[in-house]
Image (cartoon, rainbow, N blue to C red; front, top):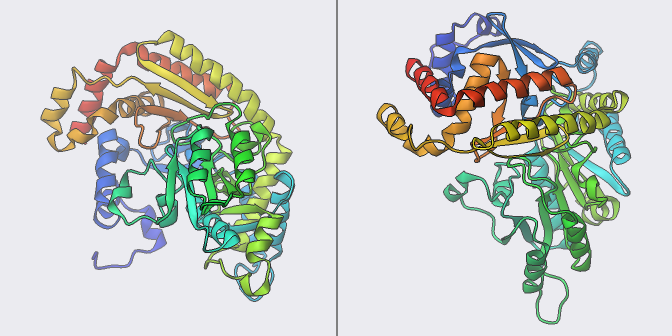
Length: 470
């Protein structure tokens, strides 16, 4: 307890020490420790616009994270701000379950327009994980209680809620929880193993397995793993053959990120259900959703008695949907899908040049559109003993710190923010706003070139110095 209730005005007057103390005491002390290790707790953002974050001391930080793909339209896009201000000023009805919302209806119509074929029916919620939960429920309802099984891949991350975690093989926390039954794992990119599983789950004499859905990512976003060409097409054919719903998670990659509206379009397939979030909210709205093919949705929820079987408190909040409507129109009006493809090609070439310049340091570069990763070779043979002496309780983090060293140097010395791939902490990820320009790409790659030229051992010593002073 603090002994007081803070006002909104008091938030702005808090000192850095008070902010850190409150976060450690009431939010997450482990998170504070990681921020201090990176030296990030010394930087405080005061505002943000477009590609830049302005710190309290006036410095500008080039944000190449795009909010981990949330900020496809950058920080505080003027059209997004105007839409939300207009909504508030007109005192529009935000939520009331007794009236049909025109904002939900129009957003769903817009989703049907940008998605292919008969992907027509949408449900909107508060996050990507919630979208996955809803999609899996829809699949189970569609096929009935005799076919409740769900297949997922060995390279997958779909969220941290219970069902989403049960089909997320790369979530390190899975072992701490009771997962859903009847979830089966197959190798990502291996269509043959998928068919073998389908066959193994068919009862004798039957040609349909006790499986309702196969959920996968068109591109595994958090590790930047790409399936072999033709894999998605083969998956589509197998799901048709065995009457299994194909559920594609586009939470990371949707809305222009890869140079397509949705990444699965690169192979011309049409999933049965698509999950999405992140960029849909225009950087302001907490919104996710799924869209299902007409026959799939209607079989599950088409009857009046089934129509409210899946809902949530904040599903279809009017202001969030209005924001998403504007976000889709901005992407269309500013031709950001094409821009992502063109500038993504340039970013990819520059990443390739970086690898050519530093072949011993950089293991791999890979990506598509404006989503690229630079995988760094771990370098700890020499610095491990030093880290163990200074941070003995953090030895489990040592193999993952090479990427953090580069990340810290990029921010503190060059004023550029990037982030690390989920669980693969030596993968430096660049997923800037779709509004990024060539000059900003050049600044980022040129800065990384200087960092790698200096040598990771020297950077490690500087990183240690920051960690000690924090």
